[in-house]
Image (tube, rainbow, N blue to C red; front, side):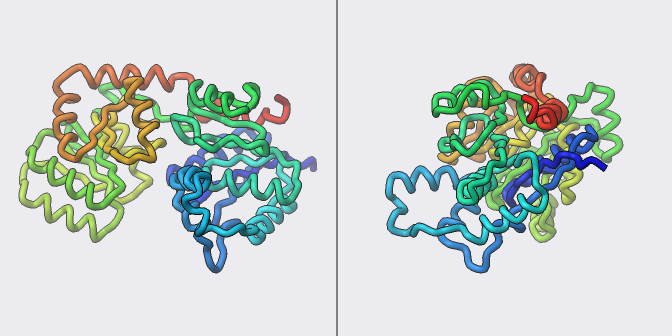
Length: 362
Protein backbone atom coordinates (compact mmCIF):
# COMPACT_ATOMS: atom_id res chain seq x y z
CA UNK A 1 0.00 0.00 0.00
CA UNK A 2 1.30 3.42 -0.94
CA UNK A 3 2.26 5.59 2.03
CA UNK A 4 0.14 8.67 2.58
CA UNK A 5 2.14 11.90 2.85
CA UNK A 6 2.58 13.02 6.46
CA UNK A 7 2.22 16.52 7.90
CA UNK A 8 3.91 17.08 11.27
CA UNK A 9 2.21 19.82 13.30
CA UNK A 10 4.43 21.29 16.02
CA UNK A 11 2.73 23.07 18.91
CA UNK A 12 3.52 24.00 22.51
CA UNK A 13 1.75 24.32 25.82
CA UNK A 14 0.70 27.98 25.48
CA UNK A 15 -1.56 27.02 22.58
CA UNK A 16 -4.89 26.50 24.37
CA UNK A 17 -7.26 27.12 21.47
CA UNK A 18 -7.13 23.65 19.92
CA UNK A 19 -5.89 25.04 16.61
CA UNK A 20 -3.49 22.12 16.08
CA UNK A 21 -6.31 19.61 16.52
CA UNK A 22 -8.71 21.64 14.33
CA UNK A 23 -6.22 21.64 11.49
CA UNK A 24 -5.36 17.98 11.99
CA UNK A 25 -9.03 17.00 11.79
CA UNK A 26 -9.64 19.16 8.70
CA UNK A 27 -6.58 17.74 6.92
CA UNK A 28 -7.46 14.15 7.86
CA UNK A 29 -10.98 14.69 6.51
CA UNK A 30 -9.56 15.20 3.02
CA UNK A 31 -8.24 11.63 3.11
CA UNK A 32 -5.04 12.58 1.29
CA UNK A 33 -2.62 13.01 4.23
CA UNK A 34 -1.86 11.66 7.66
CA UNK A 35 -1.21 14.15 10.45
CA UNK A 36 1.00 13.86 13.52
CA UNK A 37 0.74 16.47 16.30
CA UNK A 38 3.95 17.00 18.26
CA UNK A 39 3.70 18.97 21.51
CA UNK A 40 6.61 20.40 23.47
CA UNK A 41 6.31 17.63 26.05
CA UNK A 42 7.90 15.45 23.37
CA UNK A 43 10.65 17.79 22.23
CA UNK A 44 11.11 20.49 24.88
CA UNK A 45 11.08 18.67 28.20
CA UNK A 46 14.44 18.75 29.97
CA UNK A 47 15.39 17.98 33.56
CA UNK A 48 16.55 21.54 34.24
CA UNK A 49 15.39 24.49 32.17
CA UNK A 50 17.85 27.22 31.31
CA UNK A 51 16.91 30.89 31.83
CA UNK A 52 16.29 31.14 28.10
CA UNK A 53 14.05 28.06 28.11
CA UNK A 54 11.96 29.39 30.99
CA UNK A 55 11.48 32.78 29.37
CA UNK A 56 10.67 31.25 25.99
CA UNK A 57 8.19 28.91 27.64
CA UNK A 58 6.19 31.98 28.61
CA UNK A 59 4.80 32.01 25.07
CA UNK A 60 4.01 35.61 24.15
CA UNK A 61 7.10 36.77 26.03
CA UNK A 62 9.31 34.94 23.52
CA UNK A 63 9.31 37.67 20.87
CA UNK A 64 9.90 40.34 23.50
CA UNK A 65 12.79 38.33 24.93
CA UNK A 66 14.54 38.32 21.58
CA UNK A 67 14.21 42.10 21.28
CA UNK A 68 15.64 42.63 24.75
CA UNK A 69 18.42 40.15 24.09
CA UNK A 70 19.37 42.10 20.96
CA UNK A 71 19.67 45.26 23.04
CA UNK A 72 21.98 43.46 25.42
CA UNK A 73 19.68 43.66 28.43
CA UNK A 74 19.93 39.93 29.08
CA UNK A 75 23.33 39.38 27.54
CA UNK A 76 25.06 38.87 30.87
CA UNK A 77 22.46 36.38 32.08
CA UNK A 78 22.22 34.15 29.03
CA UNK A 79 25.05 31.91 27.96
CA UNK A 80 25.35 30.31 24.54
CA UNK A 81 23.75 26.91 24.87
CA UNK A 82 23.35 24.04 22.47
CA UNK A 83 19.80 22.74 22.55
CA UNK A 84 21.10 19.23 22.01
CA UNK A 85 18.29 17.30 23.71
CA UNK A 86 15.56 19.26 21.97
CA UNK A 87 17.24 19.05 18.56
CA UNK A 88 17.81 15.33 19.03
CA UNK A 89 14.16 14.73 19.88
CA UNK A 90 12.92 16.72 16.92
CA UNK A 91 15.41 14.94 14.70
CA UNK A 92 14.15 11.59 15.92
CA UNK A 93 10.59 12.61 15.07
CA UNK A 94 11.65 13.69 11.59
CA UNK A 95 13.43 10.38 11.00
CA UNK A 96 10.55 8.37 12.41
CA UNK A 97 7.75 9.98 10.41
CA UNK A 98 9.67 11.46 7.46
CA UNK A 99 7.06 14.22 7.04
CA UNK A 100 6.59 16.11 3.82
CA UNK A 101 6.76 19.28 5.91
CA UNK A 102 6.43 20.67 9.44
CA UNK A 103 3.67 23.15 10.34
CA UNK A 104 4.36 25.33 13.42
CA UNK A 105 1.43 26.96 15.24
CA UNK A 106 3.18 28.81 18.12
CA UNK A 107 6.25 31.08 18.33
CA UNK A 108 8.01 28.60 20.61
CA UNK A 109 7.34 25.67 18.27
CA UNK A 110 8.54 27.77 15.34
CA UNK A 111 11.77 28.64 17.13
CA UNK A 112 12.42 25.00 18.01
CA UNK A 113 11.72 23.81 14.47
CA UNK A 114 14.11 26.26 12.81
CA UNK A 115 16.74 25.60 15.50
CA UNK A 116 16.56 21.89 14.71
CA UNK A 117 16.49 22.39 10.96
CA UNK A 118 19.67 24.46 11.04
CA UNK A 119 21.61 22.23 13.42
CA UNK A 120 20.53 19.01 11.72
CA UNK A 121 21.14 20.53 8.26
CA UNK A 122 17.70 19.18 7.41
CA UNK A 123 15.90 19.99 4.18
CA UNK A 124 12.43 19.58 5.65
CA UNK A 125 10.10 22.43 4.78
CA UNK A 126 8.82 24.59 7.63
CA UNK A 127 5.49 26.38 7.49
CA UNK A 128 4.57 28.89 10.19
CA UNK A 129 0.96 29.74 11.01
CA UNK A 130 1.26 33.21 12.56
CA UNK A 131 -1.46 33.40 15.21
CA UNK A 132 -1.65 37.18 15.50
CA UNK A 133 -3.23 40.21 13.84
CA UNK A 134 0.13 41.94 13.35
CA UNK A 135 3.47 40.62 12.19
CA UNK A 136 5.78 38.96 14.73
CA UNK A 137 8.66 41.37 15.30
CA UNK A 138 11.25 38.64 14.81
CA UNK A 139 9.22 36.09 12.88
CA UNK A 140 11.17 36.19 9.62
CA UNK A 141 13.79 33.47 9.28
CA UNK A 142 15.47 32.05 6.22
CA UNK A 143 14.81 28.49 7.44
CA UNK A 144 11.05 29.07 7.16
CA UNK A 145 9.65 28.23 3.74
CA UNK A 146 6.11 29.59 3.98
CA UNK A 147 4.10 31.81 6.31
CA UNK A 148 0.32 31.62 6.73
CA UNK A 149 -0.97 34.94 8.05
CA UNK A 150 -4.24 36.52 9.11
CA UNK A 151 -4.31 39.65 6.96
CA UNK A 152 -2.58 41.53 4.15
CA UNK A 153 -0.86 43.96 6.53
CA UNK A 154 1.00 41.07 8.19
CA UNK A 155 2.12 39.91 4.75
CA UNK A 156 3.33 43.38 3.83
CA UNK A 157 5.30 43.62 7.08
CA UNK A 158 6.99 40.24 6.48
CA UNK A 159 7.85 41.27 2.93
CA UNK A 160 9.51 44.40 4.33
CA UNK A 161 11.54 42.09 6.60
CA UNK A 162 12.86 40.31 3.51
CA UNK A 163 10.41 37.43 3.03
CA UNK A 164 9.50 36.81 -0.63
CA UNK A 165 5.82 37.69 -1.34
CA UNK A 166 5.14 34.24 -2.81
CA UNK A 167 6.13 32.69 0.51
CA UNK A 168 3.40 34.45 2.49
CA UNK A 169 -0.19 33.22 2.20
CA UNK A 170 -3.01 35.43 3.52
CA UNK A 171 -5.61 32.88 4.63
CA UNK A 172 -7.02 34.17 7.93
CA UNK A 173 -7.05 31.95 11.02
CA UNK A 174 -8.45 28.39 11.19
CA UNK A 175 -11.60 28.98 13.22
CA UNK A 176 -15.04 28.31 11.75
CA UNK A 177 -17.79 29.72 13.95
CA UNK A 178 -21.00 30.61 12.14
CA UNK A 179 -23.19 33.50 13.29
CA UNK A 180 -26.60 32.34 14.55
CA UNK A 181 -29.78 34.11 13.48
CA UNK A 182 -32.40 35.15 16.04
CA UNK A 183 -34.36 31.89 16.06
CA UNK A 184 -31.22 29.73 16.16
CA UNK A 185 -29.80 31.74 19.04
CA UNK A 186 -33.04 31.52 21.02
CA UNK A 187 -33.17 27.74 20.56
CA UNK A 188 -29.52 27.34 21.51
CA UNK A 189 -30.03 29.46 24.64
CA UNK A 190 -32.96 27.33 25.68
CA UNK A 191 -30.92 24.17 25.18
CA UNK A 192 -28.19 25.58 27.45
CA UNK A 193 -30.73 26.58 30.10
CA UNK A 194 -30.22 30.31 29.59
CA UNK A 195 -33.02 32.88 29.75
CA UNK A 196 -33.95 34.76 26.58
CA UNK A 197 -32.48 38.04 27.91
CA UNK A 198 -29.15 39.47 26.76
CA UNK A 199 -26.07 37.43 27.63
CA UNK A 200 -22.59 38.73 28.41
CA UNK A 201 -19.79 36.20 28.03
CA UNK A 202 -16.86 36.81 30.42
CA UNK A 203 -13.48 35.16 29.80
CA UNK A 204 -10.70 36.90 31.73
CA UNK A 205 -7.37 35.17 32.28
CA UNK A 206 -6.12 36.98 35.37
CA UNK A 207 -7.84 35.80 38.56
CA UNK A 208 -7.66 39.15 40.35
CA UNK A 209 -8.96 41.02 37.32
CA UNK A 210 -11.81 38.54 36.88
CA UNK A 211 -12.81 39.10 40.52
CA UNK A 212 -12.82 42.87 40.02
CA UNK A 213 -14.80 42.84 36.77
CA UNK A 214 -17.26 40.27 38.14
CA UNK A 215 -17.84 42.44 41.21
CA UNK A 216 -18.45 45.50 39.02
CA UNK A 217 -20.96 43.61 36.89
CA UNK A 218 -22.80 42.39 39.97
CA UNK A 219 -23.24 46.03 41.05
CA UNK A 220 -25.22 46.70 37.86
CA UNK A 221 -28.00 44.32 38.83
CA UNK A 222 -29.83 42.25 36.25
CA UNK A 223 -28.71 44.05 33.08
CA UNK A 224 -27.84 40.74 31.39
CA UNK A 225 -27.18 37.09 32.07
CA UNK A 226 -23.51 36.53 32.88
CA UNK A 227 -21.81 33.46 31.37
CA UNK A 228 -18.48 33.34 33.19
CA UNK A 229 -15.59 31.05 32.31
CA UNK A 230 -14.05 29.67 35.51
CA UNK A 231 -12.55 26.19 35.41
CA UNK A 232 -10.97 26.29 38.87
CA UNK A 233 -13.44 24.86 41.41
CA UNK A 234 -12.12 26.87 44.36
CA UNK A 235 -12.24 30.13 42.45
CA UNK A 236 -15.70 29.30 41.12
CA UNK A 237 -16.91 28.81 44.69
CA UNK A 238 -15.49 32.20 45.70
CA UNK A 239 -17.30 33.89 42.80
CA UNK A 240 -20.53 32.12 43.75
CA UNK A 241 -20.26 33.54 47.27
CA UNK A 242 -19.79 37.02 45.81
CA UNK A 243 -22.90 36.54 43.65
CA UNK A 244 -25.12 35.60 46.58
CA UNK A 245 -25.46 39.24 47.62
CA UNK A 246 -27.29 40.06 44.37
CA UNK A 247 -30.29 37.77 44.19
CA UNK A 248 -31.78 38.86 40.87
CA UNK A 249 -28.70 38.39 38.63
CA UNK A 250 -28.64 35.38 36.32
CA UNK A 251 -25.17 33.79 36.37
CA UNK A 252 -23.84 30.65 34.72
CA UNK A 253 -20.31 29.46 35.43
CA UNK A 254 -18.65 27.54 32.60
CA UNK A 255 -16.39 24.92 34.14
CA UNK A 256 -15.91 22.72 31.07
CA UNK A 257 -13.78 24.26 28.34
CA UNK A 258 -15.49 22.01 25.80
CA UNK A 259 -18.64 24.09 26.38
CA UNK A 260 -17.01 27.48 25.88
CA UNK A 261 -17.95 27.88 22.22
CA UNK A 262 -21.53 26.79 22.95
CA UNK A 263 -21.98 29.66 25.40
CA UNK A 264 -19.98 32.13 23.33
CA UNK A 265 -22.10 31.69 20.20
CA UNK A 266 -25.34 32.59 22.03
CA UNK A 267 -23.86 35.66 23.73
CA UNK A 268 -24.55 39.26 22.78
CA UNK A 269 -21.28 40.72 24.10
CA UNK A 270 -17.92 39.18 25.05
CA UNK A 271 -15.64 40.61 27.73
CA UNK A 272 -12.17 39.15 27.39
CA UNK A 273 -8.47 39.52 27.96
CA UNK A 274 -6.44 39.87 24.77
CA UNK A 275 -6.89 36.41 23.26
CA UNK A 276 -6.40 36.03 19.50
CA UNK A 277 -8.51 32.87 18.94
CA UNK A 278 -11.37 34.14 21.11
CA UNK A 279 -11.41 37.55 19.44
CA UNK A 280 -11.33 35.93 16.01
CA UNK A 281 -14.24 33.66 16.91
CA UNK A 282 -16.19 36.73 18.06
CA UNK A 283 -15.60 38.40 14.71
CA UNK A 284 -16.86 35.32 12.87
CA UNK A 285 -19.86 34.78 15.17
CA UNK A 286 -20.98 38.41 15.09
CA UNK A 287 -20.32 39.10 18.78
CA UNK A 288 -18.83 42.51 19.71
CA UNK A 289 -15.74 42.00 21.90
CA UNK A 290 -14.68 44.23 24.78
CA UNK A 291 -10.96 43.66 25.23
CA UNK A 292 -9.44 44.50 28.62
CA UNK A 293 -5.78 45.32 28.13
CA UNK A 294 -3.08 47.77 29.08
CA UNK A 295 -0.31 45.25 28.39
CA UNK A 296 2.59 46.76 26.44
CA UNK A 297 3.35 43.41 24.77
CA UNK A 298 0.02 43.35 22.92
CA UNK A 299 -0.46 47.09 22.46
CA UNK A 300 0.35 46.94 18.74
CA UNK A 301 -2.24 44.23 18.12
CA UNK A 302 -4.93 45.92 20.22
CA UNK A 303 -4.34 49.27 18.51
CA UNK A 304 -4.54 47.56 15.11
CA UNK A 305 -7.91 45.99 15.92
CA UNK A 306 -9.21 49.30 17.27
CA UNK A 307 -8.12 51.15 14.13
CA UNK A 308 -10.24 48.81 12.00
CA UNK A 309 -13.31 49.03 14.24
CA UNK A 310 -13.20 45.36 15.23
CA UNK A 311 -13.18 45.69 19.03
CA UNK A 312 -13.72 48.18 21.83
CA UNK A 313 -11.09 48.43 24.51
CA UNK A 314 -11.16 48.87 28.29
CA UNK A 315 -7.85 50.01 29.75
CA UNK A 316 -9.29 49.90 33.26
CA UNK A 317 -11.75 47.40 34.74
CA UNK A 318 -14.37 50.06 35.48
CA UNK A 319 -14.55 50.96 31.78
CA UNK A 320 -16.09 47.56 31.04
CA UNK A 321 -19.43 48.60 32.56
CA UNK A 322 -19.78 51.73 30.44
CA UNK A 323 -18.84 49.84 27.27
CA UNK A 324 -21.45 47.15 27.95
CA UNK A 325 -24.14 49.82 28.26
CA UNK A 326 -22.94 51.45 25.03
CA UNK A 327 -23.08 48.16 23.17
CA UNK A 328 -26.54 47.34 24.55
CA UNK A 329 -28.07 50.78 23.97
CA UNK A 330 -26.47 52.17 20.79
CA UNK A 331 -25.70 51.02 17.26
CA UNK A 332 -22.01 50.57 18.12
CA UNK A 333 -22.64 46.84 18.49
CA UNK A 334 -24.03 46.58 14.96
CA UNK A 335 -21.03 48.47 13.57
CA UNK A 336 -18.55 46.12 15.24
CA UNK A 337 -20.47 43.04 14.09
CA UNK A 338 -20.60 44.25 10.48
CA UNK A 339 -16.88 45.05 10.48
CA UNK A 340 -16.00 41.68 12.00
CA UNK A 341 -18.12 39.67 9.59
CA UNK A 342 -16.61 41.45 6.59
CA UNK A 343 -13.10 41.00 8.00
CA UNK A 344 -13.38 37.22 8.35
CA UNK A 345 -15.80 36.27 5.55
CA UNK A 346 -13.15 34.75 3.26
CA UNK A 347 -11.33 32.64 5.85
CA UNK A 348 -12.09 29.10 6.98
CA UNK A 349 -10.49 25.98 8.39
CA UNK A 350 -11.21 24.11 5.16
CA UNK A 351 -9.51 26.74 3.02
CA UNK A 352 -6.33 26.52 5.11
CA UNK A 353 -6.49 22.70 5.16
CA UNK A 354 -6.90 22.60 1.38
CA UNK A 355 -3.86 24.81 0.97
CA UNK A 356 -1.84 22.56 3.28
CA UNK A 357 -2.69 19.34 1.44
CA UNK A 358 -1.77 20.89 -1.91
CA UNK A 359 1.26 22.80 -0.60
CA UNK A 360 3.96 20.64 -2.17
CA UNK A 361 2.38 21.19 -5.56
CA UNK A 362 2.41 24.98 -5.17
